[in-house]
Length: 127
Image (cartoon, rainbow, N blue to C red; front, side):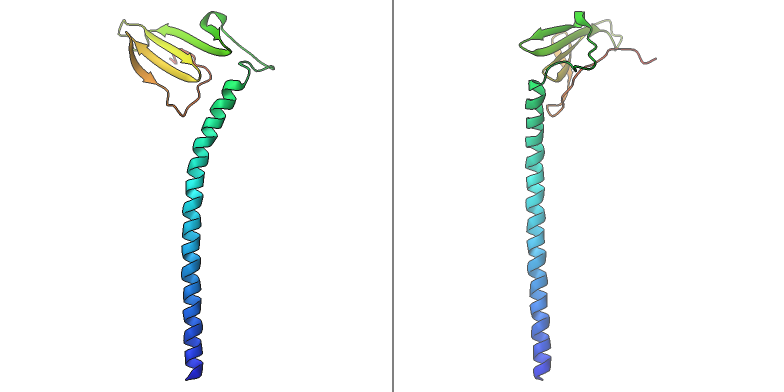
């Protein structure tokens, strides 16, 4: 009888250990996921800040179409106009501080996401 009680007690202790370990691991995983989410936001903010500090050209290779680039306080902005949708109204393609915007008659048709960094763009017909 005593052996059965000891075995039952040992089994109960093992069960409690398993429960506590699973709760700990679940909390650890949740904490890690939260840290990863916060880290991703901070990583992009850090990336964006570091990108703005970098020189605007690569020392090894730098191809610039000078008539389309304007240098203002160390940032390069680029503007081009084209009628890519063939509606006889020009769209303005504007790149400034890593954000690309497409504007037509004062209305923003499209703008790159705030968590993107656009270095350059090219207007061309793929056909």
